[in-house]
Length: 84
Image (cartoon, rainbow, N blue to C red; front, side):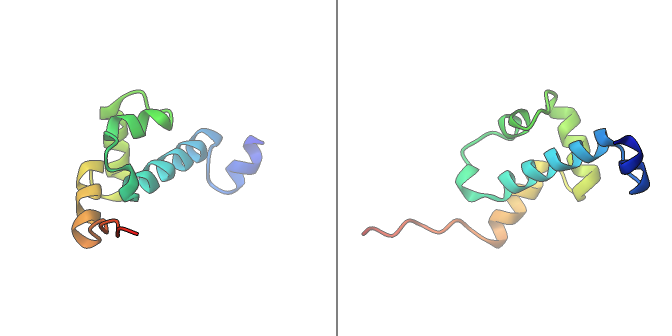
């Protein structure tokens, strides 16, 4: 299995970490998850250290998680629920 990943220029560990980061990025982009602290989102996807998660997120996506979330809300504010 390692040879398979190596052929693509990845390690198994790196591939898994990228998938976990992507799940965190999606959760941060979801306005329904705004009430959840970033540390909880990170922990849900296996990042025990908030500092490590933040550094890795910034390195991967170019901004720390809190700035990423804030930026998305400024561009796409959550829509108010319409009464039925």
